[in-house]
Image (cartoon, rainbow, N blue to C red; front, side):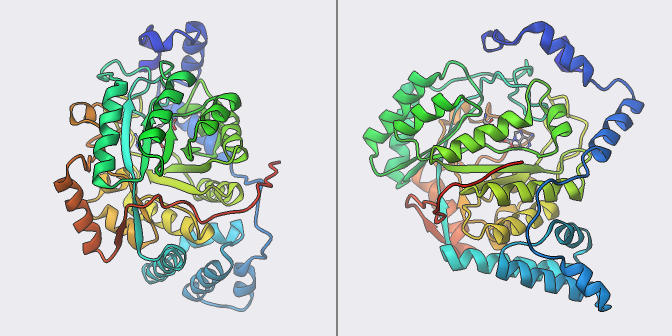
Length: 426
Ligand code: SAH
């Protein structure tokens, strides 16, 4: 277990008490096969509940009473989902577990149509700048977690960030997504400086941050300086699994951050990884219900991909089919959502991006980070880097997307979701 043997992980770890770190990591460490069974049972048995549900009655019970076939039930559920953008939890569970190949295609055609209805064939391109891979967090799955001593750490300088934006602006981008580990170096003052620089240079551009959990006050300062959007995947709603994946963190804090972001008026992005160990259909439906209730403007969903230098190196990656199914369901549950065909999806399958777009995705985030550091932002194995730092590279991406029958849209591409914020969690 790498966590335990990791006494020091550089200056960014100084805030964590070593005792606490060691204790928690010991508690959750896997020493034998029977530990794995114990952990598995804990995740499965204690967390087979979903607190929230839709107000719609079950289609399944009605149809079963009338002796309908499985295919007929699938079709009825998909039609209902298409019209009402919701389905009760039990029906969702049944649909995920029982959908046949033909019904999957039918579902995908409906989710694709739903995207077309609100966004047409537009695919929004966002310039991604991975500006630091220093991270104080302990996410077991992630290649840049604080405990990975093999990670080659870097931080872009202000000048490098500025140059990346200049390149992006010249290429026509009007959204810049700044993503990084939770790096204490980038405190509020430094983030404010970066955002102000971008807003000054590109006043009509949107700025998206993906820099993890911060205090309400910090988010507020970032909002005030002009940050438009914030991506913070919830990762999983299975609280026990969340704890195992992040031994020093709580799902509740993550959720609170998302609620704070929504409250402050950011276009907010939640999302989860597909194919985490021991995941069940109930877990997926709980994630979907969470998203349906939160009403985020953006949802990031991608397969979990093994990273060889993490604790989870012996777990297998998530699969394409489940990821596509989840994307399709999210599009139907939240018709106006901005839904990226993620890099992880493009990494696990060479047609991943196309398949994502075909089921209703409408965002792609090509990489604008300087080439010198790109391979060091290694969240997972063989991470695909669709660079677009040159006009030529961008042209290639554009041609690819247009070849699939979509329109590359370089405008801000704001969310079409509007309305007041009235979510109350149990
Ligand atoms: N520090 C930011 C950004 C994290 S990296 C934050 O906390 O939000 C962005 C996303 O990459 C994560 O939210 C996670 O869902 C995903 N990710 C990290 N490691 C991964 C892996 N091994 N496989 C697939 N996705 C991964």
